[in-house]
Image (tube, rainbow, N blue to C red; front, side):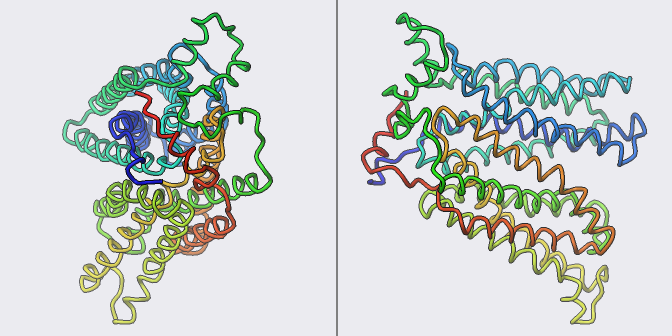
Length: 458
């Protein structure tokens, strides 16, 4: 297929990215500000605050796969995903703004739980919009662009956090986050049109019945759909090889999120206690990981598109494992030169080694993370994209529920270096899984079908 025939609709993808940006911004602010609020206002210790902060993962484990599957069958005049977005985003924005306004612990916990539930309504549907609207061959590209928007949301959250420090009020931060959610809502509602909406309206206006199960088969066969290769596959079961690949990819996702979440959770502790980094600098060091991830998100999608998703993920995992090694042995490396961690003579070298390793790791993580969701939804027919997106969240959330406890236990009982040893082992386990994956790249479409898939829905 010629390169000229393959073009991503960047405008539409950027507009979709506003939904992911709003979600990323809200959760970044939530994770940064709620623990501090619980401590400062209600006197919570870390253990009890951690229980509250783990609620979103527990809710996500249960609700996100269910809501993804429900959205697959939610045919309406505005689409399958939009009903959930229309309800979920405004409700989430309202509840988010209300979080810092209550002086009662019971009311605050109630608002937090309501916010978590409201976010769950649209979290899977808004991500499922990307594969709904993007041809299979171009989904890595699109996911790279969307994750770039998500990274911008994280940077905005960091900036808003600095506003909190300067103004001394959290109400500004939460209110600003709500405004960004409403802006994203406006972009999605005004400019995104689901193929399912037009097909449903045509069906109903033409006198068709409202049986959604029967309509799903009509929907799959509709000529206007992007995913023409899925025509007639409404009830197609995965082959045994596809099932093995799906299980292996989901297992790999579990392992690499175990590794990533451990670093995200405990890097500041490692930096203070092992690297002897002065207080205040350790948080900034994590930007050496986040910023390269953001910068490399789109190139990682392009590499996955050109070289294949599996190859790109495998390369990214090898880079991540290699990046862990210098940090694991940083104290021993400097000991060879007669220097101790925390000495002035070793501080500059420590910063160069650690920052360099984190920059490399950020690029490797982009290669892994950007291409993983497209591999999962590649195995789904158009009628099951929401369900498979839910599978992705189930395994990533499971990892984020288990890892903080297990990684923290290893660090407490053995040594802080176990943080990066644990992460390297988890990345290696993910690599082992990916080596046996045989499906998930764009593999079963002929040149003609792929060219047909690039129909302009506008």
